[in-house]
Length: 175
Image 1 (cartoon, one colour):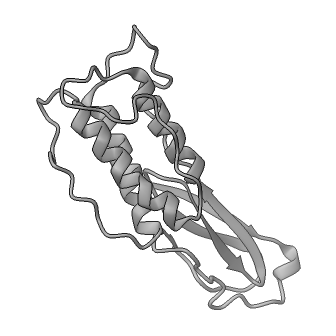
Image 2 (cartoon, rainbow, N blue to C red; image 1 turned 60 degrees about the vertical axis):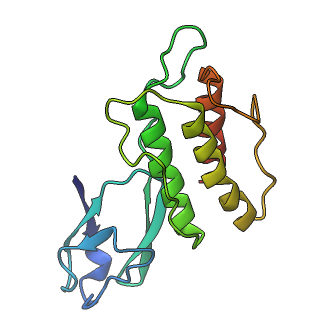
Image 3 (spheres, rainbow, N blue to C red; image 1 turned 45 degrees about the vertical axis):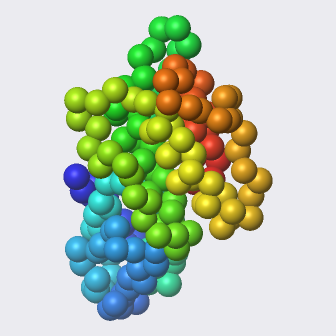
């Protein structure tokens, strides 16, 4: 999905040409529909949707505009202990956000054991993989590693809402 927007070029730019007015930084996630003109007008732009937060700058006639996009909320947030069921979508959302963080910090892609979680139950292995994939991001960012409830999950460990909540919090802090 792409989200449109527009910037007005006011009267103070009437005598100023704004040919090549856009300097796109931290892209290619947004683009200008019109990149030159003279005088009062509107410059349209679009922003592609994302699974993680990001910032960029548009410069129009020498004036900088910050474009900020936040990540979508996590599904079933907050999870409630004893009430919420941990589902594959919770793991998938974390994978997407962690993959984006790994890319941001120039880390290689993580090889998830189960590429698709369709029809699968969430297991301790999935939580352990998320933790293992996130750890190098914290190292690359020079941050202390997050702490987790049940740090050494083993096969057959009951997955708790806290396991997902802790990973979500760890992802949000570093985004």
